Each structure stands twice: as structure tokens, then as C-alpha cells.
Image 1 (cartoon, one colour):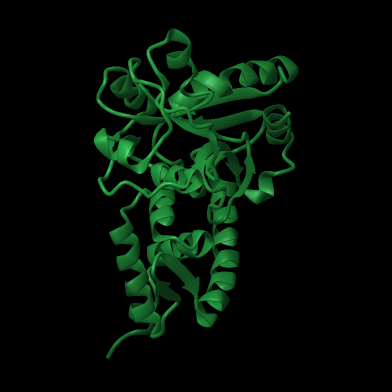
Image 2 (cartoon, helix red, strand yellow):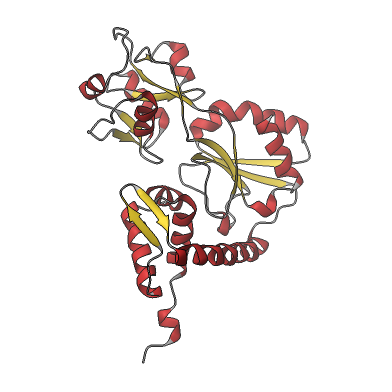
Length: 290
């Protein structure tokens, strides 16, 4: 006889469903959870089989919650929030120590001057900055806040957009000035970072160009990405403030004469909603959004 416990959904599958329901994208949910899109899809199918009904309608490049999926998402979101609250109460004491996670590239450019300003204005707060490419797990108490790159939607987290991101292709000097065309993009290798959304597809859509068929060569760090472009390995998407040091030194230049495009994806400060009014985090948010 099958026990009731054996037919209950695995907690990890429920967490994967929550992320996919928030983003309506298996690819974005995979980035949030540090999984592959196929692993996310497998978990969702596993959950649907356990529950005995579909939770998503899968269309061409479109993901929509079914009626059952909407109801389940509401219940799951409340349950996970309660579980995270209980876990956090045991794991990460707040006091006056604020732990912030960010990537090294963003921390060393846009973020660092603002953190210096925060420390001068809030000497009583011990700010601990941790730089890492992996996404911190708020449920495990790894940080109080983090800077993440994406669309601004992460399951169970509040987010505030830190800056508008204007992107444009960059490359090593020596190109003849011209407007971007689909043919020009096909002639040279495109470069991108490993984690995160497909920014080339977004930029091409904004620029009115067809997306190149070839997949970009990917690097695990934005500094390596821009070094690869500066050494002539291809074209990368640049955006201030990350690419500013390479532009200032002249090692990278705009690859085309087209104006920068305002991207939908950007950098966000994220944290648990229940921490929004905690004084150290509130003070940090005010400095970063000023």
C-alpha cells in the first residue's frame, strides 16, 4: 500500500515551481535556483505527475499558469514565506551586522563608492560585503541582502531596481564606424557571460534586428568577457558602469554607431519582504537608491 507521505510533493519541486510561477520562465527560474532549465522542467513535470494535473500551459516561448497553478502558487508562496521566516529566526541574527552579497565586477565599480558613503553615514552598522558569482540562499541565512541581475522578479523576495542599464556592443579598436546590421553581427563571434538572461536577444529586439542564429561564446565573469573582447575575440555587450574602465583606457570602443538601448534587465537590490523596515537595510536601500 502506498503511504500518504509517498504521494506528497518533494519540497525542492515545490520551490522550483514557486520560482517558475514568479518568473513565468523556466530559464529565469533556473538562473535564480542555480539549476539548468532542463532540471527545472523535470521538477515541474515531476510535481504535476504527483498532483495529477498540469500547473502550466506551455506555448511557444510562453509559459502561463493554469487555474490550478494559480491557486497552488498562492498557497505555496504563503507556505514558503512562513518556512523561510521560521528558518531565518534560527539562523541569521540581525543586530547591527548587515551582510550584503554582490558580484565582484558590480561591487568594484558602481557599488563601492556608495558603500563608502553608507559607512560614513552609518558608522554603527557593520557592513560585510561578500562577492561571489553564485546566488545566495536567503532561506539558509547566507545574507541579509544581495545585488542580483535580472528582470526584478525572484520568488519570495522584494526587489528595487538600482539603475537603468543602457547596453551597446563593444569590441577592440580598429573597426570602421557603421550601423549595426544582422549581417554584421553574423560576421564576428558574439561574447556573453554564462549566467543570466540572453541579453543579445533582448538587444537585437530593441535595435530592430534579427537575433543571430549562432550561440554566443560564454565566459563565467564579466571581467573575462571584456578582456576577451579587448583582445579581439569578438563583440560583447557593454554597459556603464561595468565597461567604463575599458572604454576609458581605450581598450574597448563602441562596435557600431547605434545609440545604446535601455534594457529590461538590470541590477536589483533584493531582500526578504519582512526585512524591508529593518533600520540597517532601510538605510542601505536609501543610499543605493539616492
